[in-house]
Image 1 (tube, rainbow over the protein chains, first blue to last red):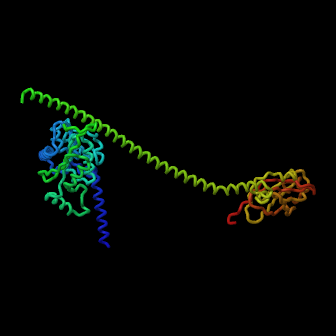
Image 2: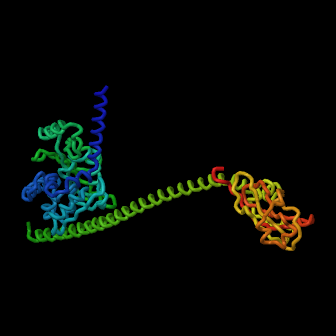
Image 3: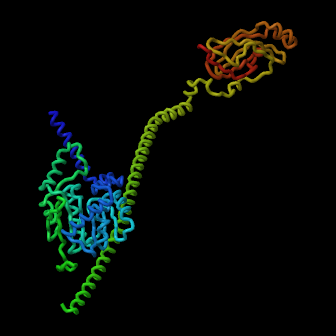
Length: 251
Length: 236
């Protein structure tokens, strides 16, 4: 009887912990109170040189999967301290970095100060309601989905489809469950006592999950990519339809 | 490839780049304007939220004040109901005071009285002295008034009495006062024993006391009339 009661208490505590996970703004603002901690939280490194190296690696993934063009208006979801944007802004027409954490964006603003084709946007909640419909050429979300619940991952994929112009591309990645690396991440997290699970612990994805999100959101040319860092990426293209409803060729 | 075609292709690519740039610039402008509008909207929403909070606080305050007013009205109603019997009693008392019954039961000493009663006994011209002062009478027990009296015109005094309010008390008259006889020899010719001693009962409160004298078995005349107070003695 007492075991059942203990289990119930632990279950309730775990539910509470899971609920905290959705308080993304609070969780990530806490992690961004110190710039060094913020860099660790978003990239795993604190020195600028290593951050640039990892940024170039991410950009190479973008180039090889969704593609980048120098006339692209690019939007990054969960840009953090602007790790990728600092480099990618040199290769695109304009780079928008959005994040739900205003504290993270303060660090990003300091890092990206002086770059003219950069805009930072604080999201007030899950979604991209601050971004106008059909204005973005490339929208991507890297090293973020592992911190989101599935419903919120799909919300962002839906929003990606809305903000992309016809023919626009999307990219998002996560740790796959069906690889050795992914299973190790999964197992290490599973060993945590329920009551000690933190709100931002990494949660894996699957290829079927990514494909389903992209299909349900209305993307075309859906592809799931194996990345050299052990992650998987989902890419898709918004149907190239002009305002009159006719199919057009992508630029 | 002929050079003309190459040049043409270069021109077309340049034109396409220009169109693409202009189109991107247009979309960027739209995105930024939307962002600014959204930011303005968020600001307005925050203000609305703050105003809503303020309005909510006002409603709470209003409800609190209403509750206080209701409580005050309830208190007033309670006090009114408590006051009603008192008013009723006061009205009854006022009616009773107007009645003859009140005059009988109120204790006349509690009410200031005029000296109309003395009008029935005309004042005379006397010389007198009271050995025991009646102005402050302390109960319990009866009070004995002692003194002497004689008319100034030299006629003989045949009786002395004390009138208190509606009551008349008689006592002893014709007591010797040798010092008075020595002092007022001529006037005392027909009053060789002018002294008197009258005991009377008196209720608490204010009264009108009069010493009255009868001259040569004729009508009674007032020697002196004065208000007196009967006060409860300590320990009574």
